[in-house]
Image 1: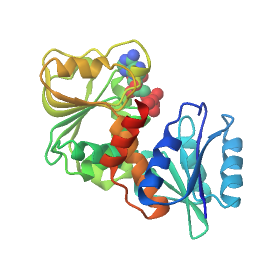
Image 2: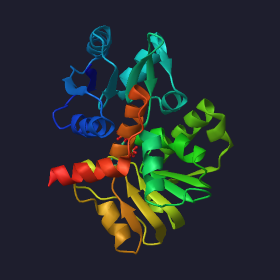
Image 3: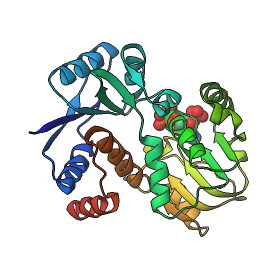
Image 4: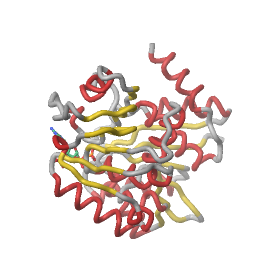
Length: 278
Ligand code: ATR
C-alpha cells in the first residue's frame, strides 16, 4: 500500500524533498507518494493543512520555511515535541505517535551526521558558529551532544548571539553546562577546528566580514546550491570545506527513518541523486 508524505512550505516549488525521499523509498523497496504542499503563510492555514493531511491517512510531513516555528507551536499546544525540536523551537518533521501529532527536528543531527560522514572529528573540536537565527539555534544542542569542545557563537548583532545562548541554556541543561563564548563576527579571530556559517547571507550577494587572523581546519556552510564566498575564503587558506547539500540529505534520511523505521544508505542515495541531477 502506498504511504503518503508531504512537505509543507511557502514557496514550495523548489523543494527537493520529493526527489530525495523517492530515492530513499526505492533503495529500501517501499511504495511512497511524496508531494509538495503549498500553504498560505498564516498559522490557521498551516493547522488546517496538517489536520487534513493526517486525518486523510498521511504518514509523515516535512515542514520548511516559513512554517518551522508554526509547527513547533502547533505541536507544543496540540501534541508532543522531541527534545531537539523543543530546544530548537522549531519542527521540520511531523508524524503521528499514538494518534497524537509529534514534532521532531532532524536538521541539527543531519548536520552532525554529515560532518561525521566527511570524516571530520567532532570530539573536543573547537567550533565557531556564525549566525544567531533559527539555523544556528537548531544545531547547537546536537553539536554539543556530539561531543564538541569549546563553542564560540558569533553574529553581526552581538546581542542576538547573547540572547540565543541565554535562551538555549534555559531550555537545556546540557547547553547550560557548556562553555559558549559570544563575539561579533568581525571580531571572530584565532584558530578553530570547525567554523560553520549559519547565517542567511548566502541568499544575498553580501559577504561576511571575516578576519584574516581567523583560521580553521574545516569550514561548513549550511547553505547550498550557489557559489559560497564563505567556503571560497577558507578553501583558499587550505581548509577542507563543505556546503549544506549533505546536511539536506542527512536530515531527510533521519525523517524517513522516523516515519518508516527504515535506515537508508545516505552515501548511496547521494550518489544516485547527483547522478540523476546530471
Ligand atoms: P535563519 O532561520 O536562516 O537562521 P534568521 O533567523 O533570519 O534566519 O537569521 C539570519 C542570520 O543571518 C542572523 O544571524 C543574521 O545576523 P543578524 O542577527 O545580525 O541580523 C545573519 N545575517 C543575515 N544577513 C547578514 C549579513 N548581510 N551579514 C551578516 N549576517 C547576516
